[in-house]
Length: 224
Ligand code: 5RP
Image (cartoon, rainbow, N blue to C red; front, side, top):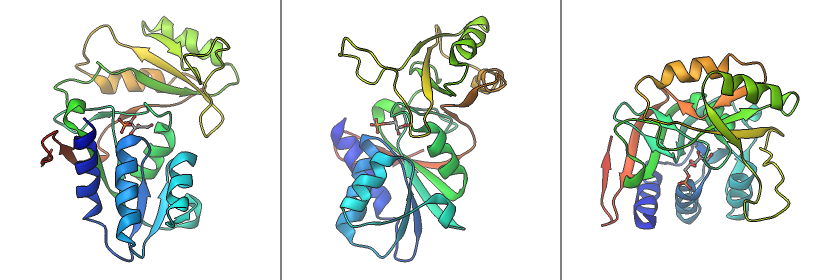
């Protein structure tokens, strides 16, 4: 799995040229991409989708700008938790899907990078993260569960006895939904959940990724 992530990240980095403004994703696969950019010592500007990616990029010497400081983003490269043949995604395993979606949809192009374990025929095996405002989050969860979806709050450290809720970079909570069966119409699920007051965004990405670079454990890649 690790080799697949690395080769996908490194392949995506070959597409980056001097002068570009590049969106940096979040997660272990995105980190391989960020590291490859650091190693290439390009003259680029970047925008990060999370505090974690920003920290790593800055430490490596990349020029990181706030998203509100740029007027154009050439390309965003990010990982995913699932990708189907239509390049619909479930993201947010790292709790950053809202910023990731803003960044990717504000970019001229988004490229997904992943190892082959993330490729699915139908979305829904992975949990769907839903970012929810802390104000009224218990009511929001009840409304989501009244629609028939079962969720659990993400905690910051699942191994700790003192289980505090995970807080996103935006100061919100995450409810992870578990689906009983694979999804045939994920768009309907997204629309219903997003209509609930207090829901900031779901981890579904539709019509955002134009290309995906998938890394195999033998070190080769293929595109979706
Ligand atoms: C973070 C994400 C990540 O891209 C997704 O969870 C995949 O992570 P990894 O590359 O570590 O498997 O959406 O919010």
